[in-house]
Length: 302
Image (cartoon, rainbow, N blue to C red; front, side):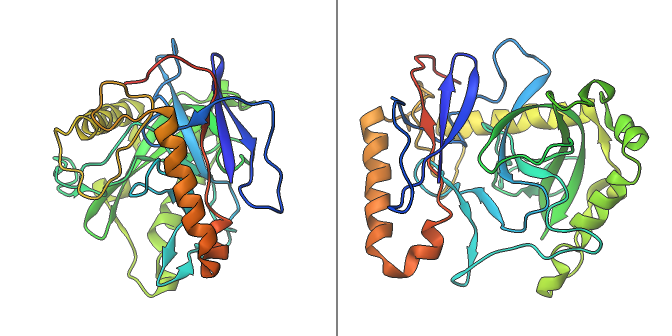
C-alpha cells in the first residue's frame, strides 16, 4: 500500500504500508485523495503533457487497477471468483510489455456509443501504455507525452489504449507521434497489437478485436479521445451522467456534489481498513490495497 504526496512541484509517492509488518512514513502531513478523481489530468502550465497513474510496472503479471467502484478508488489487484487475477505470459513476453496505467480525470462512458468504433465505453479511466526505457513503480505518477492510440474492442466495449512515453525518458525527445514509435522502436507496435489480441486466450476466451482493423491512430486523434473522455468524467462528477455504481467521492473537485472533507476521507479509509482487518480471509487482498495521500496543497482540480 502506497501514499501519494501532492506538492507544488508535482505528485510524489511514498511507501506507506497499512499492515503491522511495515512502518508508516512520518513527517508527512496531509490527507487521502482519489487517484481517479483528484489527480489533475494535466500538470499545470504543460499543455501537451498528461499525468499518468502507473497501475502495473512492465514485466509484471498482477492485474492491478484503480478500483472505480470503491470509495476514494484505491489501486488494488482485481479479483475474480475469489482469486487474485494475473495476466498470462504471451510468448515471447513476460507479463505486461509496457508500464501500464491510466489517465486520471477521464472516463469511458458506457452509455455513449463512440461514432468511430460503434461501441460504448468500458466504464473505466482511459488506459495508457508507457513505452519508455524505465520500469516504473506501481502507484507512481509520471508525466507523459501522448503519441497515438489503439482502439481495442473488448467484449463489445470500446477500450482505448493510449501509447505514450514519459517526458523524463532519455529518448523522449525523439518521440512526437506514432510514426516515431515505428522508427525508433521497430516491432513494438506489432507486439502491442499481438499482446492485446491474445492476452485473454489463456483464460479460454476468444481473441480480442480492434477498431480500424488494428490500425494505430496518431497523436491528434488520441488527443481528441482524451478530451472527450475528460468531458464525460466532468459530467460524471457533476451528476450530469449516470455513473451507475462508479464511486465519485473526491477531496479536490470542490464544485462536485461528491466532494468530501479531509476528515471524511480519512474516516472512509479507516472504516475500510478496519473492515478488511476484521476479515481473516482477506489477507491476500489486503496486500494489494493502495492508499493515496495529498500533501499541503490548497488548489482544487476540475
